[in-house]
Length: 168
Length: 48
Image (cartoon, rainbow over the protein chains, first blue to last red):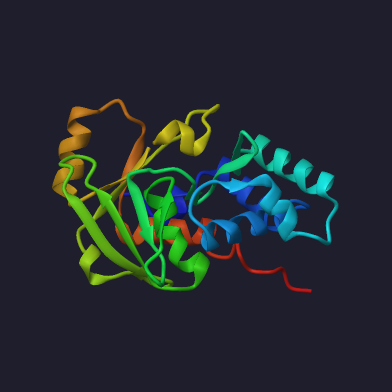
């Protein structure tokens, strides 16, 4: 087994650090808030409208840079994916407080949503080997007892892999 | 590919059928720690 520290891919970790502090961080937070507030892909125009203090062209440029860095996926005027959220159905369902469901890109992304939103969520996904349905709560401090025994497989990404679109 | 398995036995059974896949298994607790490390503070406004 690997420890969490060993699991962190150095290449991706650099992106996460840039995301938190770089010039696109504000735009990325707005995208993530939109995914929390509504289901499905987020229209670029909705992101622009949520940031009235920024010029629309600057927001669009930031989104393009975030897409180029594989921090989100733009398609047809919408943000299809903004890690950890997917705008279209995946096997990984996260139920937010209040019962609204969202899709996440993978197991690790689903587990990271509770600490990100600071609330207890429910994760539902199939066992990748047997197909048996799994469902367990995750709060900001960790998975609930119902997750005891559950395991995750963390693949080593290819050099040119885009995370979600290449791993689902 | 980052997937869930119901148990270590299920994970081992899958891996034995897919030995060429590069990666590793981890407990759900370690998976959570990684998810928190990556996403935990993404919505936090930076300190001024």
